[in-house]
Image 1 (cartoon, rainbow, N blue to C red):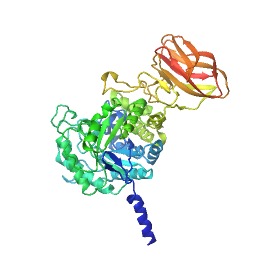
Image 2: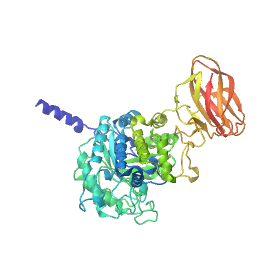
Image 3: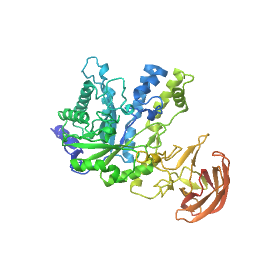
Image 4: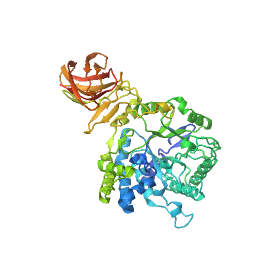
Amino acid sequence: MKRAILLSAFLLSQFGTSQLLKTSGQKIVNDKGENVQLRGLGLGGWMLQEGYMLKTADFAGPQYKIKEKIAELIGEDGMNEFYKAYLKNGITKQDIDFLKKAGFNSIRLPMHYNLYTLPIEKEPKKGQNTWLQEGFKMTDDLLKWCADNKMYLILDLHAAPGGQGNDVNISDNDKSKPSLWENEENQKKTIALWKKLAERYKDEPWIGGYDLINEPNINFTGKNPNGTDEMSNAPLWKLQKDITDAIRTVDKKHIIIIEGNGWGNNYNGLTPLWDKNMVFSFHKYWNYNDDATLKFALDLREKHNIPIWLGETGENSNVWFTELIQLLDKHNIGYAFWPMKKIDNIAGITNVKITPEYQKLLDYWKNGGEKPSKEFAKKALMQIADNYKFRNVEVKNDIIDAMFRQTTDSSTKPFKNLQAPGKISATDYDLGRMGSAYLDKDFINLWVSDPEKRSEWNSGNQLRNDGVDIYKTGNNQYYVGKTESGEWLQYTINAKTGKAYTFDINYSSNSPAKIRIEDASGKQLATVSLSSTGGNENWKTVSTKGINLTKGENKIRIYFENDGVNLNYLDVK
């Protein structure tokens, strides 16, 4: 009896008073009726790879083509061995623990259907569904890691059977085969997969919702191939309704999340809502962070009196991230940033480090030439798979700071513990908002809103995700470059004693220039003339004496009075 009572208490704690999400008017709430703003991250690149994530976009965009390239070098068995290691290492409990500690409360899982069931053309019997354990086991493990951290897991069908649109990279569809919309078997398999998932997770309180079809992009009747000008979207609404009906036969609890056409944002022709526990998802990239860019989504929320959720966003600068989250907080909109891991990633919270050996494979795939040996290629690929382990990735603390602290706090923090005397790399400027920790004139990418403002923000694409342009030298050192008149960088320096110091400034410039040194209050400490060095990586050192630092913390700013100065380091003596 005692055991039964304890078990009942445990079940009550898990389910009866769980944090199961539901909708309440325009809000997402928990079982206690408390508002829940989902602050999430999408695990892009794990179950489904797009070419740009592995740096193969120039010659292999969708995953099936990436696999073909790998198999060409190391054979089918070798390719399968690589992917087994890649999937094992890609997301682990360490990753989820880290995301919770960073401040996220939810995860969006982009699922590839082929980890859960066979493609229709490979089914032994037409119309049947062969269930594969790999995808379900991965999802089970992920859910447990999320539950352990009290984080919500949102299931997102990112690659549907046959592919849900003409953007083949995001759904890994082969255009030579029938698409989701052209083939009834693919639609039936999609519905059956969702029913299977709902049946499996119907009683799981940390499942946050079912995101039915990621970014549909298809021209049913319109001229735009990605469905941005569709007016009815009738097949899209019918399929999502049919999926919902199948889910509700086994799971009446969890939130249903639907997406519009045109990569998620075209809700034209929306039929009367078919469920009482539903959320609209929209996606947002490369435009302004203002009310105008949210208007269509806010109007949907108001008209239908149901919540909206920014299911995917990212691939921009820290300034853009901070501004976006401030805007979403203002309107009580949850979000999921994209992606978790990719190679040479400055705009995500972790970076997977490339290797020279993998670069050789990329060069061969792109340009041809001498074919790498099977042994070389396999070793290179397995090293990349190993680099996806959490302990081997580079955590991007500047992005975490921008997404969480900087949204409410305008103060600056040291990026590293800088000491005087000591050598200070130019790239170690403070953490903080633009205008507080640094000033750069090209700091976000707005090409959707304004094609003339297409920008890489950090044009060197190295180390940090601010507007500051950071480049790598030929000997793998880093410097700040492409500076413009009026830009500046701030450094927090801890001086061991209060006295006058000498600053040795290592720089390069194609023409004579000046920089000035001030403290954070605006007091000028020095003006330094820089002669031309005759090239971007022709480095020269100039000294300026008598810069007074107080004992302890000093905030020092370097102002650029001319364009084109490259700053390597400061040696404070």
